[in-house]
Image (cartoon, rainbow, N blue to C red; front, side, top):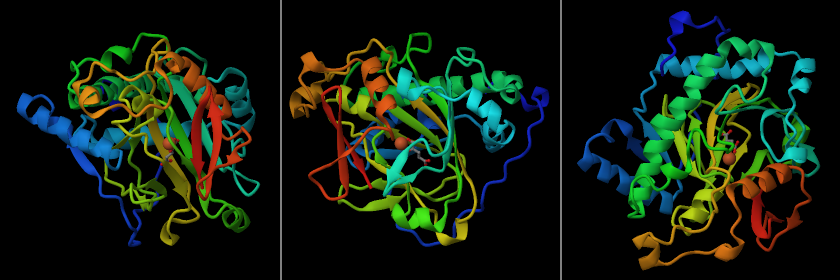
Length: 366
Ligand SMILES: O=C(O)CCC(=O)C(=O)O
Ligand SMILES: [Fe+2]
């Protein structure tokens, strides 16, 4: 990243909980070493790894993405600012208007989402569009805008775009096929999120079966999660088991969302994941996250890229007719407004609830 820490404003240091020593059943996830991206032969190998991961677990790690461990620690210090350095009054002033606008910018304060059994969430989010000047921010964040801009650009150009190139190659499409619909300058909502989970009462834990964030698919194309030490994220494996995602220092945890599943004709799965109470040795502590949520440019119609020889050979899993395919804008607004607010109906499978967004079935898992 371009901003050096020498010139950066002082920010209190966030100390995360130490790594868990509990023996958990972890998901076995592939590792994509981005330092190998420049070499054409190794790049082809990476594309094969990504393709396999996307068709099985739907998650993989990225390492050697160009940010040092110290720079990563600074990102988490900054991630904590919107929660620790901003008063409740000011937080309310910058509250997001998800329900009214379908846009996810500003705070999502605690208790906004319904989880399960009448229990509401204990998670605060602060979301920032990649164009950091698009909206005003709380005072404490303003001196940090150059670093937030550098963080967004790093995610976009050094992480998202290389991954999208590997994913296009995996479908035997021209390498820029996905990059061309994830423009930095186009109208669209690709954004950063900082997210802080607070410990919950025993009563809430019991009523919601220790689920902190209901099982869901992300609605965009690619999610970049900056790995952090508090174990709580689980993914639903193809065999129907929930498995934990293991922390890898300074790695990124990558998964695909609905938009990528639609564009790839089902070849790249939007994997269901959830957040649960951490293991006993990490309880009673906060859990701070940093993310980059990529969504295709607003105008992109989310129908399968049928030029792909892979889709032609192996078929397309359709969620809707091409004629009814939503644009990225319609899809993200529909899902953003509904998330945690809509009245979910009991679905056919056990523990699954359902809703329709723009005529497309969306499932939520407890
Ligand atoms: O906190 C996490 O580890 C995952 C959060 C998540 O899945 C989301 O915000 O979509
Ligand atoms: Fe998610």
